Amino acid sequence: MSGHSKWSTIKRKKAANDARRGSIFTRLAREITIAAREGGGDLDSNFALRLCVDRAKTQNMPKDNIERAIKRGTGEDKDGVQIEQVMYEGYGPNGIALLIETLTDNRNRTISDLRHLLAKAGGSMAEAGSVAWQFTRIAYFSFEAGDRDEDEVFELAVEAGADDVLFSDDVIEIFAPVEYFKQVLDTLQQAGIRLDEAELRFMPNTPMQLAAEKTAQIMKLIETIEDLDDIQNVFSNLEVTDEALELLETA
Image 1 (cartoon, rainbow, N blue to C red):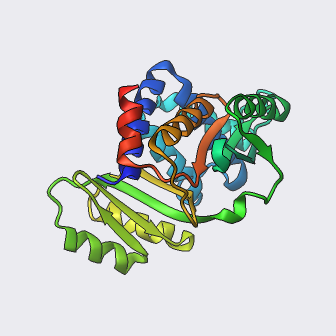
Image 2: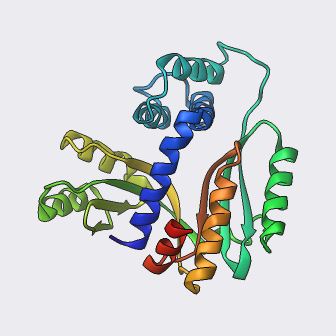
């Protein structure tokens, strides 16, 4: 399995533990609220909201929680909390570039927490735009390989607009331009494929490889950042090697 896939697997297991603590539900509710605020509460017409709700259901988020989050976004349920979607940029140790997606009701708290964690690890916050140019936004999908025929999956994905399909021992990853997100998603779902991940994410234009020990150190930093309640996603230009993953798992 590729380093990225292994790292994704570790993060999915971690997300399952977070769900039992309830923290993942808070993050998902914020995503749903933002989507409903921007595009309305109708799942059929608001594709972004439908995607958020689907992701919440895969994490077994209670139906009542989902409905409350939608109503909060549409204004039907006013609790006085205003949530903003903010992207922060920074550098980790050894100059690793970081893009940090947040949903927050308090920018001062969020940036203070981020600044503290980065400084403690030997990194720093960065000016807007100084890191983002190193990444390209793409549509990303992943699911269990099972016994699916690789040629069939490849043909299905490419015909729907995908740029690339990666096969590993137990995971299939599909990459596509942002504008083909819905088309690829619909095609995969119509084929009966149950997706583990379907999202827009930032991929580094030029991944940076470090020694295994330094890579594991930065992966731990990213995990620590992701544990903050306001954090939705952390993207980096770090190339994750098998050796670094082994170090992280045995640490």
